[in-house]
Image (cartoon, one colour):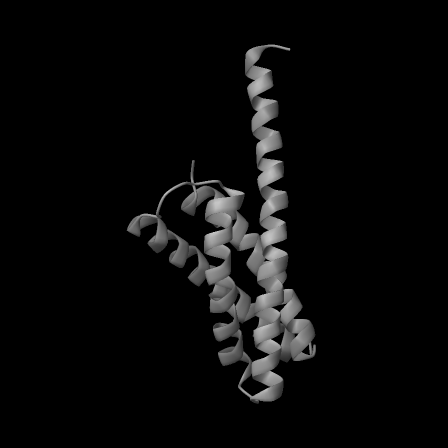
Length: 138
């Protein structure tokens, strides 16, 4: 195997490993997000979109630190530019997932909790792509 093919294979394995770690962080973020969402909607009877925004921010904060230092293994403190890119990607993800949440509730007639699952799946796709290509570029 020549050097170029070895590098391509290593890069592919690295991306797969990052995707796996991103997924594990995503599971934890989902637990935080869904837990806060459920608490706010059931216990405090908050509107689903307001609850979604608050719970998303809780998961997003967890996501930044775990993905920066564990998934993408960046050292030191994040720059202001990196943090702004992270916020931009997550705002894009939040808007996308809020639209999916509302659409699945109103158009598809799903319960708010099933609609939230669909919103989370869309959010993960937007977040991995944005994190890899825009935020934590290496």
